[in-house]
Image: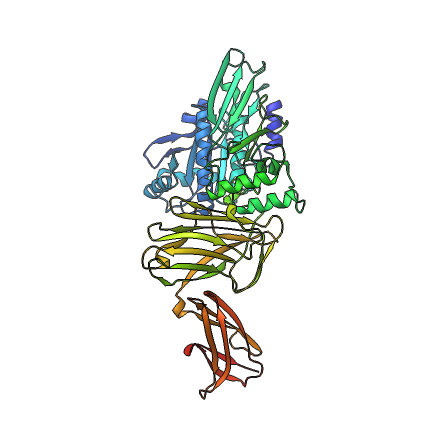
Length: 557
């Protein structure tokens, strides 16, 4: 009775009535026969069906999670469970379905229209078991009775797998006081490949799993005290970005305190019991590649959901990815729920020709003024072609040696946060200068490149918006820009100065007369000069730099 009550509470709405599944006899894409009752239900085996088709995008999203659940349940309930893929498309023949399994690394039986899938899924599309909402739809068929639990569905692929896991456990665990064990992230996603150690008087075991039931171990008398310890320690940097450091800093300063206890646990990477700037320092070292792993903790911590001790009796565990305070690693689609993606920021980067031995300052600047809470990027370079001698920033507050790292394989990683205060990044002036020594004659783009790993190039504004950084090379001899154009009272002239020196700027009207002159000293790099033009007659003007035509501007009133 207790088991039936739990099923009713947890899975209300999955079916209209306790109807048995119609029988089928199918042939999968590998030529194997499957009789629903003869091979499974009447043999005390549970069957999970995914109704899908090979070009279904949501099905592709669910595929890796469904395969993980299949692997874990087959290991947990040997000989007691089978999963199947049944297509609803007439055009999904054996070759297409077999290729789908290969592409998605799926190992369960899959049935195409050739093997009878259309007839098998028709009852579930008819409304007999509830409204059919499209693919993927998951159907669980209970052992012995054949009772159908229709359309098990969550808010995400991980949430759906969690509900399927719960239902499978309740249908397969015998009635009685059985302890249910498992681990899930704060977003409800199951965590696989967890090493569990179970210790009891005169008995102990270790196994790898996600969800599990200790009744599978007859040696363990579950009425006696025992200790269970979960452990997982891989991919330390997964899900962590400079945005997490921004959130840690705002929490420490009281600007935006964490709204959940698991975030405090995730941020406490030195296991001190509180979140401090030392946690930011340690996490930044991991991001930059100074560390390969956290020195004080494994990559995951497990907290019983109804207790505070890491070790204890068989409680469901909350799995917390260390350093990932916004939950990006375990959120649906691997996108952080706290982040909002903004439009990309294009970095126009000069691409000069350099002689061997030349020391060159590469200046990164923005076309429009911004405020940043943080920024990160990775630059790959060829150590045989160039040396990176120094990094400087006059715009990023407090920027120093601890904010970047030169990896021996030829990668520069940068991760900066403003310690809770946003820095103003002016337009047209360098926010970062990289001093480069050319070891051979080269064009700079042949030796330097923006990379996606280990750090994705992005900046974070005070509103919590993530702005991707895009890198575009421009050859200095071809670069000169006027904005706005047409202009009325003033316009900005952007050009590139290869070496420091004086530059003569002139506006020449349609008759060849010089209407405006400016002669100033400029450092090397990208220049941003405001030209007043309110007193000049309207018309088309040539912009000349040191006597050479560089651009044109139209003046209007």
